[in-house]
Image 1 (tube, rainbow, N blue to C red):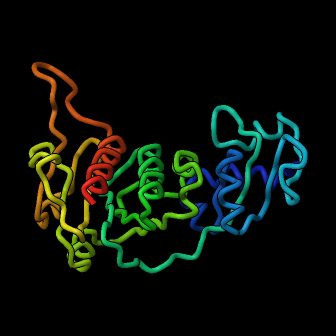
Image 2: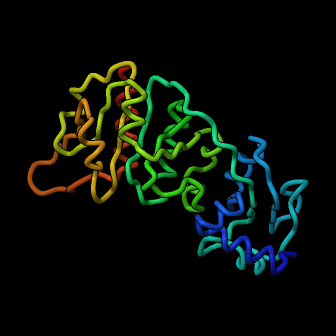
Length: 239
């Protein structure tokens, strides 16, 4: 049974300020929870509508799960976890960077892409959506357990500090298919609606675009997560 205090806290954790204040976040879905538990992330409480999901899980009724879910439709399982201890930025050949990404689904998908291509971290501007937003956690499908998101105060300063060529996804850039990415590189993706911030745009070494092959009127742009998948595929294909 979910107590009133538990229900109140779980619902409060939809908001970033409560996640920061308590050091907790909520994850939903069997796949996501299995990944977090396998990674030994500290689980404070675990609820399931099906028996025997996990030795730690507490059996609850469907109506109880509906009362604590962060989504329109409840998942069979929900867990409250401690926020992981932040790690230091590591030196990887390819660093993916997001600048002002606001859509949780897009950020979650980019985290999943980093995991797929073997990258252990993602650099984020402070203006990007919180990676422990429940929708980000869900969209990452558990990859959040393997990809560390670093939120940096001054993104342009950090990019310069990494001491690698900086490539920015930009509609006015050179064709992705004619770009030879250097072995070590930072690749930046901007806001879905506003693109790259001015401070980041000023320090780019290269602007790169995905060419549109349709003649006449067509789509104005690509979803940033889709663009990220195409970029990463091309970068690693060339290796």
